[in-house]
Image (cartoon, each protein chain N blue to C red):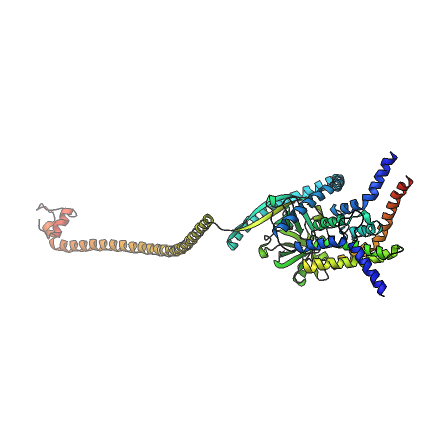
Length: 172
Length: 402
């Protein structure tokens, strides 16, 4: 019984990030658009950045690429846009991991801001200049701001969840 | 300096090229894939389009499956809240129904008149082909306000078809797959709809705002500022993308004329769409039978018009004749009176004449009587005529001869 429970916990620990990523993309509830005028954030960016930085093996690059394609189709933007953003985010976390000796949440946070600003810049160029989509700058600024602010909150939540699962596994 | 640059290059190279455990592709290769996808997506190749259609169909279907639990919760919540609101809504709907019933007849008449006028003005009919579809996914994104429908090219859906909820415009089809299709809502920032503001009939372009309202472009606020009533926004039909006269929303001037911008409140809540009507409208020319019917009608109208003119002339003639008749009757009556008078005079004259004749005869008789009385008068000695008898008179007039 205990063994089965630990198995479930291990499964959850291993696959929660990828399940969360695909669920957030395929579900109709989109944190990017909650219908509120001055509030939206990109949950996928937070999730990918956090888990790529802390647990590289939890989100495979191929899965992230596929998740990006799914997101593009769901959102209705040209296929490849989100994949490119997600993979660049992964590359950024890879770079940060390589240059960091002592991880610090505040440094990660600041680096996250720079990264998502750059990614939105890339998205803007792709959508507006190449595919001639009209995008609201104001909404994007709000999105970036809240994504940046909520990173701290979600990183604590993810950390708490992982510790909760890890703690149980370690006990076993 | 040299060392730090090397570290940077190594870190970048490691980030892009290193594969993790159980990773088949490096980030760089997947980024290249993404770029290839983007580039190929901008070209209109048949194979790429088919691949895209297959991928989209798979994703939409899997998304629909993934949202089943969420939709179940939503549906349950809505049914529970809907149950409580049911009675109030029933009363409201009942009163609205009464109002609408009264309006329905006049609407039907207006619709009929509208069709007739369109026939006269445009010389073509609009043939509509309607398909009902279920909203499969209603995923709002910051880039696109759109919904995915469960009907695709298999069901005859084509790019550019208009999408209605009841009779209100909600968007148009922008992407068609085999089993599904995507509708760009009019609330999307990329949506531009030529509209007409009624009842003043001003033309403008409506753009989405990305929120639950639209904004009018290429129109001056001052043009509608002095109008007191609520203004309705309907499609103008310009550009032949949408039919004319499809209702979209209304401008509530008390609220919407902010900062020189004119906002439109949509009639429909785009977050509550369940089933929609996809409609394609085809302009068809007037066929021969209808043309003949038109010609016949025109001839009939011309005949009626000419008859009307003739009738008018006849009516005028009749009025003249009547006037003449009145005059003649008047004259006639006057003449009759004169005739009577003359007849009277004539009879008097005749009487006079008779009297004169009688008098003359009497005078003649008396004159002859003086001369020939002795030859005719009865006496003792003769057997002639007694005085005063007709024979006596005749004897006198014959001058005593028998």
